[in-house]
Length: 258
Image (cartoon, rainbow, N blue to C red; front, side, top):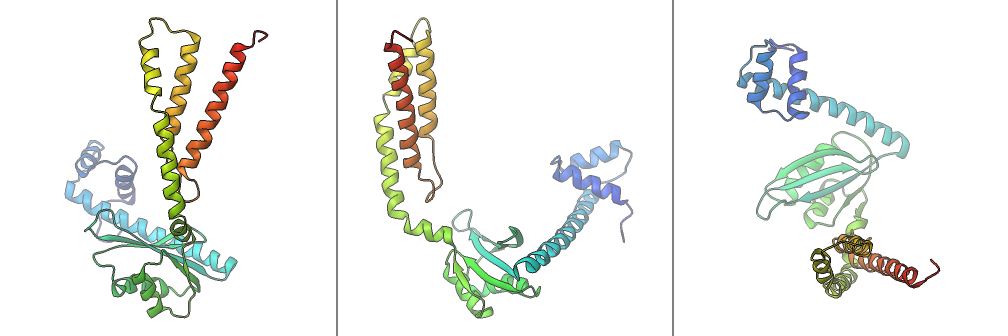
């Protein structure tokens, strides 16, 4: 590689140590020195940066092949745009993804979410020249305005997940109350646990009771995936299944023929 006195094997090895084994620059320099490769931490950083550039170039080449295949099969690509703000007041990470293949095409941290900032990252994808069938987003106004300005003729669709999430809010709230009420009714399991813990000798019935308590505690941790998997409904169905199982055990216990 031009202006680099180290071989590609060293660059590749640095990339392996950094990404696969998560070594620091100092650790990488020490490992290479032990293999009789004279190198400083600063040189390790430079070679790591070269490795990252090579990796990025490779990703772009694979991305190009993927997008060309999608165009051949579907006639064009579908772009999803979404922003994530890790903490209030920090930069927002905007990600552009090709929906049909799941390929990430761009990711940028933006200090502002105004349309003009977003136009730059969207235009970069448009300049690649692939036919675009539609845009999808969560309905954020700045994203919609940006798309209207630079691609007014391309269809825009509101993300189905966000749509269902919005219309399901009243149901999700009722489901949350259902889970809360179930948890209130099951508070007595702690008292049963204490009795088992204080028992001088464990018998088979206490072991079975401990297993049921563990199952109930596991169910109460259910968070679901609203709006499609409601946690309260899941807890209700699973606690009912545990209840049915307990009743069957009690019936067998009282049946002298078993």
